[in-house]
Amino acid sequence: MNANSLFRFQPEQPRTSSTGSLGSTSLFCTLTPLLTSLAWSATLFLGMAASQGWSAAANAIVFTQGYNATTKQDIYVQSLAPGSKPRCVSCTVDHDILPSFSPDGQWIAYTVSGNGHSDIYAQRYRGGGPILRISADGGTNSLWAPAGREVFYRRGNEMWTVSFNPAQTVPGKARRLFSGQYTASDSSWNRDMALSPDGKRFLMLKALPESPDSHRIQIVLNWFEELKRVAR
Image (cartoon, rainbow, N blue to C red; front, side, top):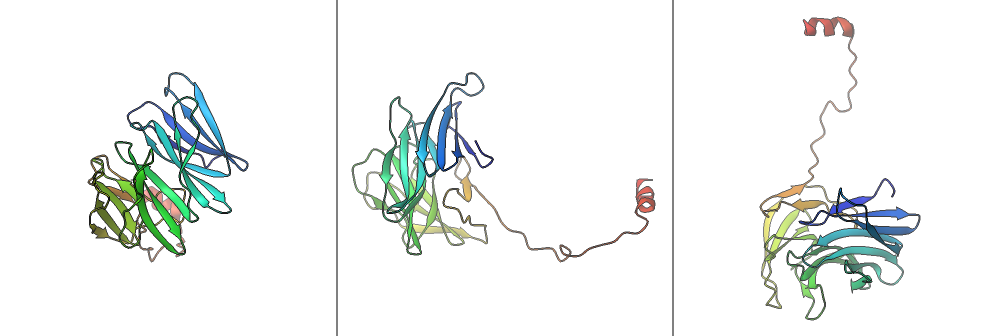
């Protein structure tokens, strides 16, 4: 594993998954159970790959794989059942990135990006049924609410939400939650936000204004004498 390896814990299970690279080959491995035995299985994928979601309900990992000459980046799922093979769930001619499982493991939301525009889509993990467009006018970096009835996503500096009913083929109306100058990742492999377990708080990065003193050099004379004075 290289220094850029990514680790994820399986929800509600004592397992962890990791993504690393060996030259031009990406490696996924699972360790089970954590801290007891080191029995593990590994699958090798040619090219870049990054684990981006692990569902205990689906017993599967969803990940982005690429780069491919015709389909660019694609989304695959790897069932953890013995003998299972990776299966493509979205391999369009655009960039299919940043997938995440719904809490019940039945749906996958992801971003499709191409020609300078991105939108959020959702489809059933096991196939069948329509592919639903979640975002109304652009979006990226989607996350599911804990109850599975909402999908959150970013659109520029804004955070939006869409109600989701798996029994309906049309998502609810998009609603803006808040806006702010939060840092946006320039990588299609990693998310730039996280959601608290109760679905009420977001964890995001925000750049602080640069201090006027950040580029000023200060010279302190008689530093030891000053230190002695302060220490008294």
